[in-house]
Amino acid sequence: MEFLKSNLDLGVVGILGFMSFIMIACVIERYLYYARVDLSAFEDPEDLDLALTRNLTAIATIGANAPYIGLLGTVLGILIAFYDIGLQGKIETAAMMMGLALALKATALGLVVAIPSLVFYNALLRRTERLKARWRRVRRA
Image (cartoon, rainbow, N blue to C red):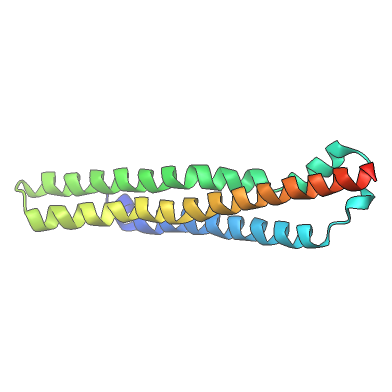
């Protein structure tokens, strides 16, 4: 339990930080790709769709799962807080509230990662729809 107690914050923050890094890298890559994509190079709509939606799944997956990583950190933090209370044999309100407050920061961090991920995902998805519409318009002309 001591290992978990001493490494919980580092583990949760590390995982969420890594997820944030991957998400930001994918978002930057997609925006750069959309800025320079040559729509006339695509003959098949499926090829266009595959090219435009690459890495969007990773962004959506991070947005969907980051709150669960934060929630896991919160549950483990509460478990540690109750374990410490059980070892002491008495309930000190200040110690219990401090343990719970520290546990809840994991959920907040998960939301800090998830919310921008989903905003970027939706913005990029909208951009792909606009690019596909432009491709269809160019093909008709």
